[in-house]
Length: 147
Image (cartoon, rainbow, N blue to C red; front, side, top):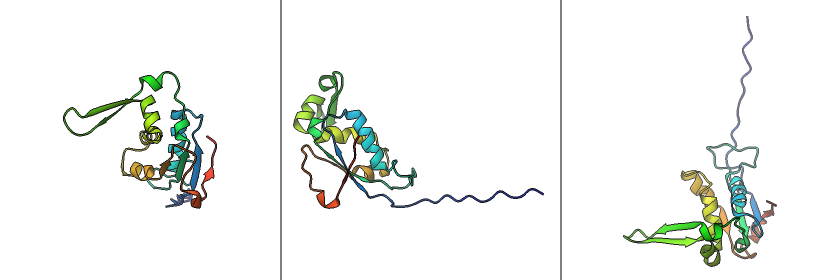
């Protein structure tokens, strides 16, 4: 008679995250930076990662105005937004957006790499982007990471 197989249990850790990380965006390529930020927001760098459980971390991005776009994306990449009224479509190139709201450039890149469900909205609330090297999160003692 064959022996039964041992029962293997999977432990799902809930709310294990909550670490704070600091990322310096100066001289970094936007897309490559955004993928790494999204990974840390979702908690994929943790060994307790599980897709349906929110174990993400907080990420503070500084020097957003010094991010780099490769090729001719500064002139050719267009960001659209709509006011909701007829004829309310607004367009901005990446260069214009980088000059006026550099933090929005990183925010949109990371937002589009996160899940498009409620969990993605939770992750996005943990992203803090600042154009300069000053940020109000010193009390949380964010750990600087090199990306």
